[in-house]
Length: 320
Image 1 (cartoon, rainbow, N blue to C red):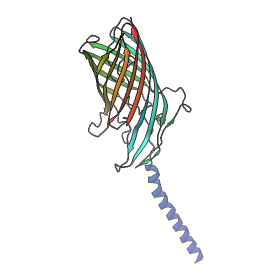
Image 2: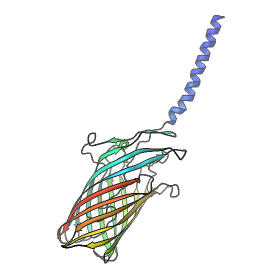
Image 3: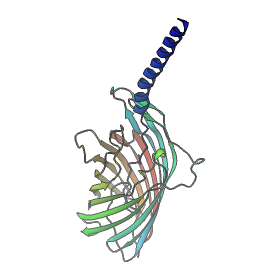
Image 4: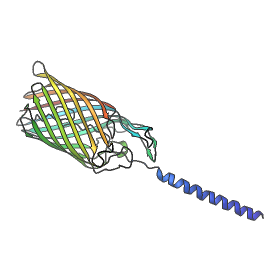
């Protein structure tokens, strides 16, 4: 009798263990870990391009060039919303960077390179639905002198002359992957951007715009807030020029820019930002200086668009 009870207890324990294993295994499998991606969506114009994102297409001279240094800070560029639509997690709550660029120009053409370097990428880890998010932890102490996703580009003005009412151009960029996806600074994939550019001046008023495509092989669409393949790029800017003395001028106006995934135009996979840009510049033949400051926020905060950001830039440019 005692032996029979012992066997029963052993059988119950075995069944309980099997049941626990069966219930725990799907739960463990359900906790998926997103790999991260390039969260920064401030795709800056080429060194010497005038605006932060738009390009004024004022390429001129037999031989010239530009050197640029820019830095910025973005708040909450990646906030994930849970399945209930209420719970939110700031996977990337802070992001700061430095970007060094150089360009060579001739006649209507410009070739350039940009080297972005993250200074700070941080956020909050947590679980939303079936996904466990691990926030990045990038700082000067942990990632000194690191370059993330260097860009090589080529632009051409195809129609119009500098300072004319209408200028049309085209540009292409190759993004070379570097860094770790878990730091949210890269897709770890080669990417390419193709942009159709427009700009013009009407007295003291100026404008610029762009339409383009980003070829983005990475598609982590099932994970909330992750890239959904290739994207459509758009943007427009407008400003007024206030002339000063000795060739100096101030240009101020808004820039609106963003992107949306081609796969699901109507799904909300869109991020749009507005940036109020002001720049002090000295232009003409020889060496010139441009100082830029931009402050803005998200109009549609999704897919990497920052809740608010501030950007500062300095450019040395000129031509013969």
